[in-house]
Image 1: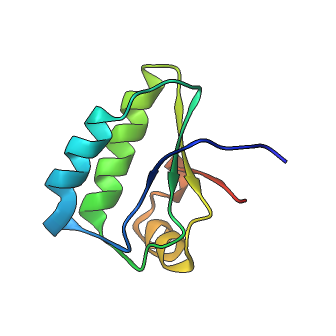
Image 2 (image 1 turned 90 degrees about the vertical axis):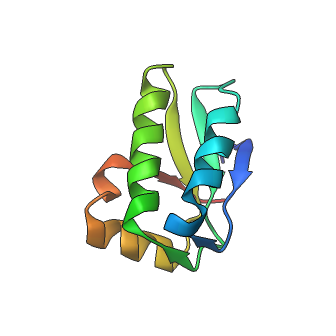
Length: 95
């Protein structure tokens, strides 16, 4: 089983009200590996603005030869991401 180094654990509620703070945090994360892993197991609320931010961040990582991985995403996370059509752009892993 692959070991993942978690760059960040996402809060339970991530939406437009916290997107500015989340963007600053993502911008400050060092890119030290081929994958940037965000733990999404605790997410109980996510919106389209956050999905758009994660999509933009994943595109940024590609320019650094890295990929964005959501570790153990919650059911709510995957349901919303799929409903909004972002699931094809995101990568997932489980522990």
